[in-house]
Length: 268
Ligand SMILES: NC(=O)C1=CN([C@@H]2O[C@H](COP(=O)(O)OP(=O)(O)OC[C@H]3O[C@@H](n4cnc5c(N)ncnc54)[C@H](OP(=O)(O)O)[C@@H]3O)[C@@H](O)[C@H]2O)C=CC1
Ligand SMILES: O=C(O)[C@@H]1CCC=N1
Image (cartoon, rainbow, N blue to C red):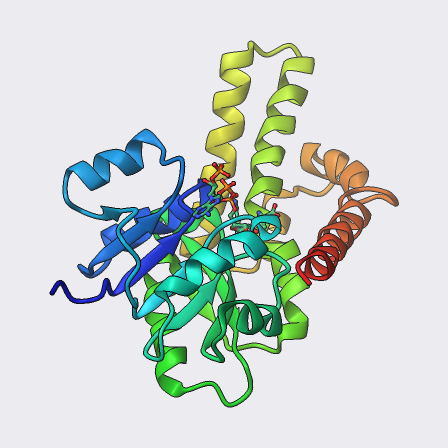
C-alpha cells in the first residue's frame, strides 16, 4: 500500500498555490493537493507527477488548511479524513483560532500560522502560534514546512495573530497599492502611464532590495534620501502630516485586525 502523503494541502487558491510553489523549491517531499476547482498550473503540476491532485483520503503527516475562513466549517468535515493520530494540522486561515481548529478537526495537534504571498519566491515572513504544551516535534514540523517560504517567527502568543495578520499577512497588498498610487501620481504629473508604472515598480523593488541588503533601518534609509529643504522633504511634509501615512496605516491595520477578530467569531 502507498505510504500516507507527507503533506496534504487543502485549498490551492491564491495563497495555497503560493505556498505550494515555495515548497516545490524546497526539499523534495510527497505533496497531495485537495482542491475542487484546480487552476491550470495546479493541474499541470499533477500531470508532471510533482503533486497528487484530489487523492483518496488517507492519514497525512501534515495537513495544511488554506481555504477561506468562511469555508472552514464545511471543509473541516472533508479534511478530517486526512487527520490521524500521527498528523499535525497547520492552518494559514485568517481568524480561525487554535481552539476552533482543534474542535473541528478532532485533534489537539494544531498550529495556526500567518504567511504572506512573497513566500512563493522564498521572500515571505510567517508567524505561528501553537497550543500550550504543543509537542516539540509539531513545532519543528511547522518551522520546517514554513522555512522554504522565508523567515519564520514563533511560537508567539495567539493574541498577537490579529495584529500579525494586519501587518505582514495583508501587508504585501499595501506595498502593491503604494506602487499603484505612486504610478498614478506620476501620470498626474504628466508622465506616460507605461513609464510611470515602470518607475514606480523599480522604485519599490529597488528600495525593498536596498533595505534588505543594507540592513539599515527604514528610518535611516528614508533620511538618507531626504536632503534638507529638498524635494523629498516637500513630499514627506504631506505624507507624514496629520492624517497622512502614519495615521492612515494605524487606522488601516486596526481595521484589518478587527476583521480578523470578526472572522474568529464567524468561525464558531
Ligand atoms: N491571499 C493571501 O495573501 C493570504 C491568505 N491567507 C489565508 O489563506 C486562506 C486562503 O486565501 P486565498 O488563497 O486568498 O483564498 P482563495 O479563495 O484563493 O483560495 C481558497 C481555495 O480553497 C478552495 N476550496 C473551496 N472548498 C474547498 C474544499 N472543500 N476543499 C479544498 N479546497 C477548497 C477554493 O475553491 P473555490 O474558489 O472553488 O471555492 C479556493 O481555490 C484564507 O484563509 C486566508 O485567510 C493567509 C495569508 C495570506
Ligand atoms: O485578506 C485576507 O483576509 C487574507 C489574510 C491575510 C492576507 N489575505
